[in-house]
Length: 445
Image (tube, rainbow, N blue to C red; front, side, top):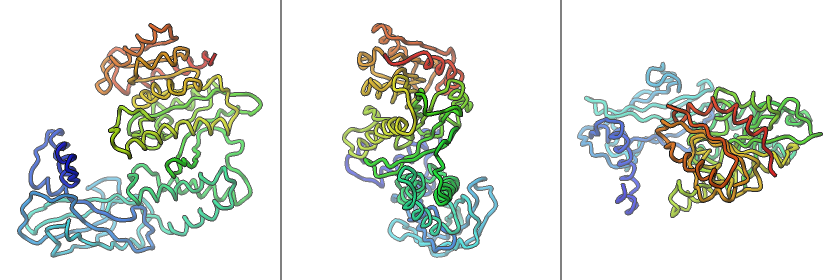
């Protein structure tokens, strides 16, 4: 891998990563598996209007070691995403004979007819054989939506008439579809059906002359344009039912772990966040952090010689700060009671961002994280609530122990909960109530 990286051999890198992951899983790497892992279905649209033409190409992303001496046969079907290979066939597109044995040089072009296919999530499946043996399968997840192009056009028109504060909320699915179709984001990170429906409901409300967010409380999402990325970012928030702008309210910024998103704090952790926000009368906002692996600016996680990786972590940091700023614009926030909390990558981000912006936060909540003890002098007046399991196989408990020891040496206000036998994830939910109780008693001096 190191040699292929040095020489810029992208195809070989893909093959070696596939081989490495297979070997790590305890499986044998065979010529047949080498061929199957080389297959890919490519298209310029994975969110597809059922009434429009659609083109897909079956290609190989590297030259396989499998010797193939007979022409190939392709069988093409469409299945629902749920159920995998056992799901019933939604549509059988038949078979193609005489398929090239070198799909990198001569891709197989397909034009599946999706007319009449119901809206929903599907898998396009292409199975290859040489007539006597199955050689491999390529799949492409897609979302089918009838009238998609007309819907997007209506949303664009509605956004031009909407108040500026609501435009990004209406345009969000259009921006996400652009990124997903371009391959900049995986389809799994965009809830196409739900987000399109939400945007349409907002457009209808604006057309009726109302701002759907005025006076809204409870659990919902907002969006804004992150100018450094040229992308619309989502964030999820909770507004207590008793909220009024006649007084100032505490604010919790919650940053998620690796591979999670802005929904994770709300939908996971035994769904406690909304209840705790209501109980303690706190606003809560959870940013995406630009990408699910954005690291919130932490430079240790990336190759600093890679300009794109550097841009990504900076945008992740920018996203958190923009959400904090937006919450202060949208709501009456008590600047002396702003709290930052995170789990795993989020805890790493919390220990990175707080020393960089020490005047922003009144207390920190950190679960299963890593930090730099040398940075604590810049936040010695910021209380910390730290949680870690001593059996954490993902982030060793020694990282939190070192941070807590350094904090105590500085005379910091720190509460440390080390869970005997606790893992990386299971320690989080049981300690959230105590963390909010800790926050409720701290304010910035």
